[in-house]
Structures are given as C-alpha cells and as structure tokens.
Image: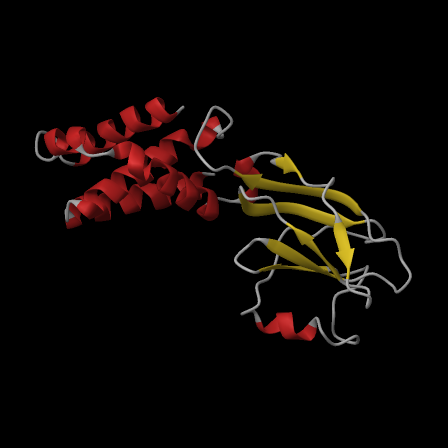
Length: 197
C-alpha cells in the first residue's frame, strides 16, 4: 500500500510539474511524509469513507459517579466513527472537544446530554473520551463503538483513499519545495476528490 501511494504521488507531481520538479521529487523522502499525508486525509474525509473501522466496544467505561464517564482510547486512535452506551436511544458520531461551548454544559445536570441526546467529548489530546450521560445507577457498558486508527499506513488502509492520499503527499512535497502554483493545484485536486466522496 505504501509503495502504491508513493508511486501515485510521483505521478501527481509529474502531472503538476512535468519535467520540472519531478527529478527532485524522486529524491525526496516520500516515506517520511506518507503517514502525515494519510493522517490529514483521514481527518478531512467524511466518516463513510473510512469504512467500519476498528471495534472499541471491548474498552472499559469508567463511571464518574454522576451518570457520565470516560473511556481510554487506543494509541492508534484518529477519529471516532460511532459510540453508543447501553441505555442510550441513539449513537453519537460527532464528538465535541473541550473548546466547544457545549462542553461546559455537560457539567450541569440540567443542560448535559442524556439517553435521548447523548454527547461524547474527545479530551486530553484525543487519548480519552467522556460520555454524557446515563441515569444514576445505570450500568456503564459500551454497546457499540468503532474508531478509525493507524500508526503507519499498511495494507488495512482504505483502498478508496489511496488516490486522495497520493495527492496529499504530493501537496506536502510541493509545499516543502516552495512550489506555490503546484501547491494550489494539488490543494484544489484534494478538495475536488473529497467533494466526490
């Protein structure tokens, strides 16, 4: 998978700058920037483009005593796909962050999320999530949870994102080479491909 993305990135660079920077790009350490390019793509695409992801339902939920709780996330975590506690009426697919104004509301029993409209927050640099909330005395058990994660691009990376990742890698290379027209072209191509997903 890595070699396919790097080869495609070289073709993207050649398409943008035929015979110009491609010889320099061949010597550029594409492998050093491949995982960063993939990370940018995974954070930008719609959730459905990531597939079903990895199962998180076996993780341990730690209640805080007020109906809310937290779950430690795996080291390879990048994006939450879906999260549902047992007793919730619907899952959460869009987590909030501590900077979100609605995060403060979660610490008030009246305004916090509940079983009908639960809320999940990614905290501590995406190493844990907080969930809000369950009625007091409820069992804190994860019913459904999936996330997308990787530490290095490998054979499990979504095949449907190879072309987009190659363009993102080409964008990083051209940015490093200070090729502003090439950067603009590749960014437009990236936006175009994301819009098609």
